[in-house]
Length: 333
Ligand code: AHG
Ligand code: MN
Ligand code: MN
Image (cartoon, rainbow, N blue to C red; front, side, top):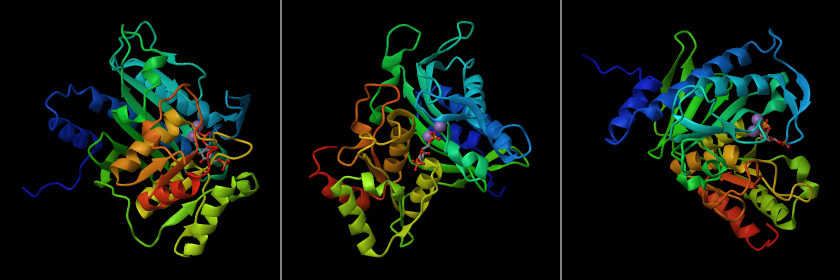
């Protein structure tokens, strides 16, 4: 019998779990439930122009961003896909100021899910790629209810991390510390199929730098010098989509560097550590890349607040390290 080339996400996760005799199957359940939520969100994203899901709710979230209807929809879909499974002790979402408890009527488990339900919200109404980002930690607190301490864990302790990019196709990319795997949704059968086994960030020539250059006037001198250095190399194209997931996904597959620096208006940058920088840093490291705040490894940063921001330099290790060379002299970071 010819070996089938169709590897579903479920089959891949089960085969990965077999390599860990101590595995309980909880992780494969969690990934399965995240994939289910991603399918539901993908269907809504793909019909966004036809159903009442475009535009704003009229509210602003804790970050001062205007909340898009799809932000709320995605947040609710993920929560409801995960709240009853008995695998999580609590959750944390970009759209909720505090830690989200598991409803009392449901059992609790030993994992924590932190997530950005809809990344790139400003791109929703203009049909540009958007995403979902997730991070999974083990529970560390006593008792069976999760708490803030279970969320405020250093990135190197992540059990798994991943993202979904709702683009020309819907892809789910994840790592559990043994390589990075990409799955493409086949909507005709509703399955995520392995399309990118063992992703490694390439050294090839089609590398890009990705940054919002409109912030140039607010950058620190060292940031400006690094950008001049990158441009003088003459071998990098500029690409900026404005959705972190899409800009990171391109950087992961083609090489290069994505930056959201600190600046005079945002001394900690704009991106959040726990559910944006940290999960993508885990994926990037597993793919042979690097991620820093300009000086320190993102995965070594001990969080102190649920929604704390962090400058982000992520992508090909040589480019991230070079950024550090320029910025390390900039003691303000
Ligand atoms: P979110 O939609 O989850 O708030 O994230 C938006 C982030 C990120 O996706 C992107 O890299 C960045 O905002 C873009 O910011 P600018 O518009 O300031 O460039
Ligand atoms: Mn985001
Ligand atoms: Mn978001």
